[in-house]
Length: 204
Image 1 (cartoon, rainbow, N blue to C red):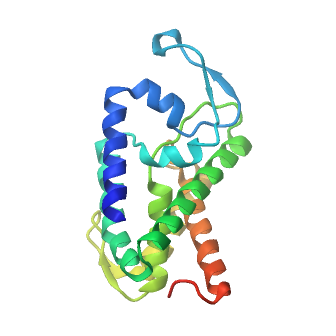
Image 2: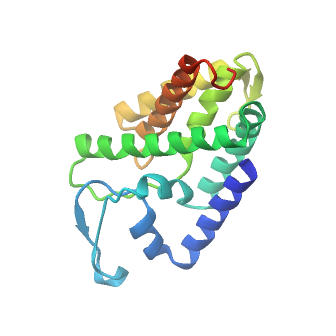
């Protein structure tokens, strides 16, 4: 399943390159409301549509954005998929993507009403996968890329969560959907908790 997700994200990025206006206007995640599009970009209006909660996760803001998201998805997701299986992993990943999207549009509605800022990227799904990895293998040793610091998975998850909360509350790193990242982790944790209560869910 990781392989197919990597391919889908790669294709989404290629389609963006050949039709950036169309794909961003229709498939990126837009805030609630209706916003005019300049005639130079085709005219019309853009705004939130229900399918965008899923499609935005297969678009990216640049090659670097795509690369780091897909590298993280491969690095942590392949291990999670081996434990859960492809079908369960896909359900979990998509729930995290949608949950991150919901968190983002609600955050914009509360904190930046009327601001027409589209959201793209698989980071919400990636943060959910990172949470699952940390819960499965809390004492696994991992190495950060930047900076190259070794740590256990549980502290990696806690550290990333704390940084995203700090950046989101303080407004640091404007242009990054920090609360969406937290939303991906929160929805992932909720789904894992639900599966646990069912008694026949995946092993954590």
